[in-house]
Length: 211
Image (cartoon, rainbow, N blue to C red; front, side, top):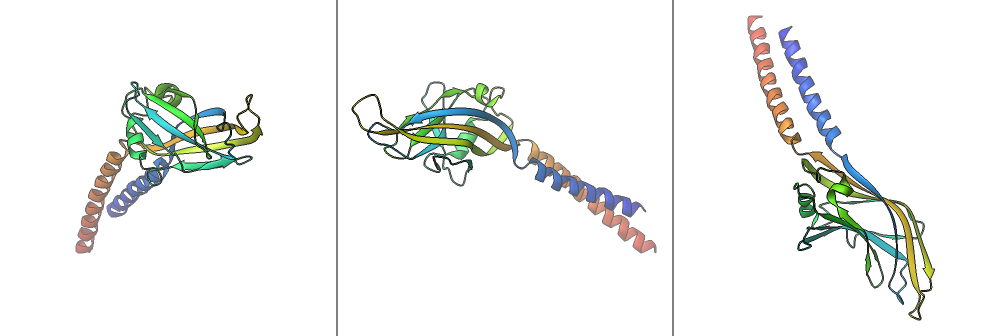
């Protein structure tokens, strides 16, 4: 009986460990919505535009960009795209900066594919991410851009400087990750589970020996 109870408890701990890892992976930490509009350079119309993020220190002396050059959106296109450490070289540095406890700037930029150029709004991390002041206590694993609608159209600038295009889009930026203390919790549960399993084996061996 003792052996069965011991085995049941150990199995429950490992099940909890597995379930905890599954549930905590891919938690959306924060998000913010944006309505964006902009256009291409005069004389250089572009049918596709990209959106990416830039982290700036308060003194604008250290700039880290993620997502640039990875995904371009055209008229009528919707969907999502994940920026990760695998496809964005500066992601790890960006992730460290948005969770270091300092309230810096995040700028959401929109650039035209042809001729480049563009711009976008920027705000303090505490305002955009709803953190205190940022995502401290979390390990950022990916940033997801969700485009809800995308309109691109040609227009004639109010000058004799050639044709251009402009875009109008609604989007959401989502920040996904896991709590920093979670690996310690997993390690503790694993340790307790291993001790229980060892005692279960001893109880089983003792029962077999008495029999």
